[in-house]
Length: 114
Image 1 (spheres, rainbow, N blue to C red):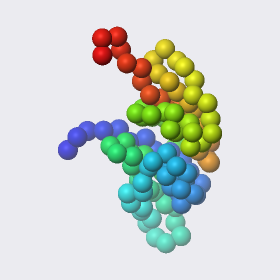
Image 2 (image 1 turned 135 degrees about the vertical axis):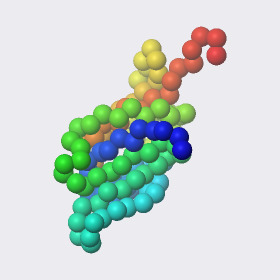
Image 3 (image 1 turned 180 degrees about the vertical axis):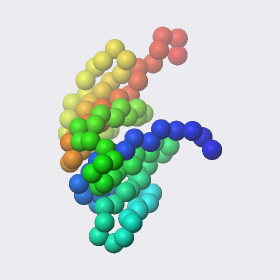
Image 4 (image 1 turned 180 degrees about the horizontal axis):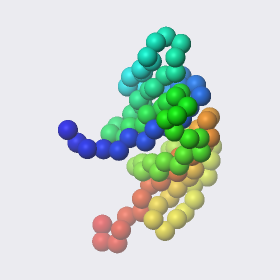
């Protein structure tokens, strides 16, 4: 097994969040509820990148920031109609999901000699 870090983001409506994250290329992997009608806990994945989306109030705080490195930040920006900014380390954009979580998304610049 490869070790990894999986950020947990607080969401009010997991189904709505899954639809929003699908625009970023994430696909729902599974959903868990202790009983029908109780809060959902969902995993979404984009390749090897995974996020947990939780309706449980104690799991995470709104306004969390996650940095996502992608191969083509321009495609993401086009999907959401936002601008790409130039930074010394990457070309980046920032989005907020429907619950106020921030995603800074960037395509790293090539290092000299690459």
